[in-house]
Image (cartoon, rainbow, N blue to C red; front, side, top):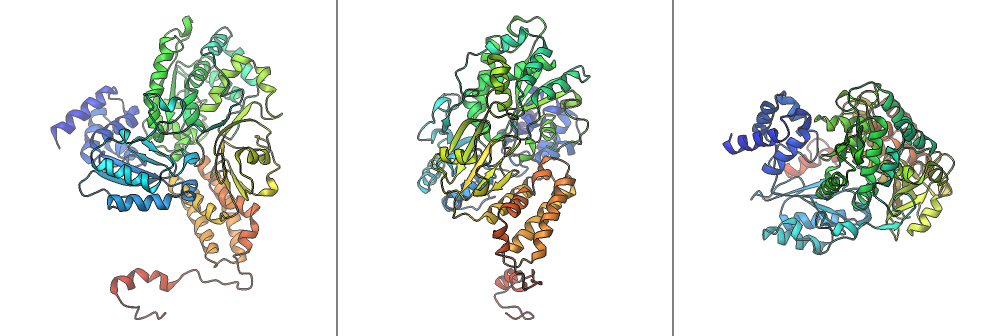
Length: 604
């Protein structure tokens, strides 16, 4: 154990108050410094913050971006979502493996480069995309890969390799990203012109109960997809007993195909901050947390600057805008690559310095959330709506959208369309209208709401986007006539298997069984009974899983069974009730290759 390791870890832990609840920040900083959080580092951290060593290891082993194994000084993460696969993932992966001389999961012999894949980095509108440390490269080609690797080998820092900067605040010195906003349609709620601070001042002139009443009158529903009424959640949190209360912003949009929060965080952070400050006033909280997904780490310096500017203008800090009775501030909590942390109780666990395990409910976060205190968790778009409601009025907001879903919705659209990007549209818009806007004519399927949503076909394109019909957190992935819907479902099942926290058996085991039976059908070995098996098992996983991940993970199978039944029927063999699923020759393949001869017992 080196003196340097001991000294640096001591400094890091002391800088975070030797606070075990800040474990995520501690281990992230240690990994950024040393390229890993190895056994010695975990021992030192545990001793310094006085927590069992197993608690440190449970965090390091849980998050995809953390590792005990020594990483290279440059970690290249290839985005491997379904959209990137459609637009060149395999080609880019091959280019990197050839240029670096290593496979995915390996580090070069000189210890400089590590190559990995990651499920989604929030760039589906500009795929294929790659993260190099925290630097984002979009619309990557073979030539781009060659250029990136050549310069990295020459010692050029990742942030100095980019050829261009993106639009809007992507080009600010504090962001400095090649990311494009791709804002295709600006609506009257999120992207309308903003007079910063006006909404918060109006809120402070009201009582907290009056603020909550306005949110209820506006009929604002949470923009995360479930659509729980925001005012009701705030009412519960305000009424709950507790010395402290907290506001948490869920900026962990890890659902493949979703990237709207990326654009809000880049172009409308003031609106988000103002909405959180209003929420804090309404529920009686003095502290707020923005949980920022690890893939958006490149935005952190910019967001920290925006928070400081808010403090400088009196929007945050002691006595907000001179109000003697209200103080409120916000800190950023970084995630580290765990999709399940989009679930609010898992997100709270992560904020507390733990594995991102979901918690049993009840008690609900409004009763007992962050560190046991009443907590309101809302997402980025919801807080932006809050600020606009207080500024423009509940009546104004409630007249936008449809009867049961007021306001606008941000859609992040990607896939087989001419104009991928972010669209702000009123609730109640039909899928046909969306496809026309995005240039998605000829679509044969649309994934509504990311992998946990529904895959719908043309017969459903007259339906409307709203909580009472096609509910979505924002992701729409468009698929053209050349895409195989069963391959899409198989990919999504793979995703859920990888991202399950593994706590409950229905999710941990059920998703694997669903995928295996789906693959059996795709290989032409399916029987009619397999379709009923998929439907029955899918329902069991949904109804018995512990959290939202398992409760929605069978949807790729169930919705394709419902909406694309002919694709399944074409593969199952009704006249052959028994189909062998075990291929002895395939199972012996590796052994025969290694031995260099055929099997002595099982002839071809």
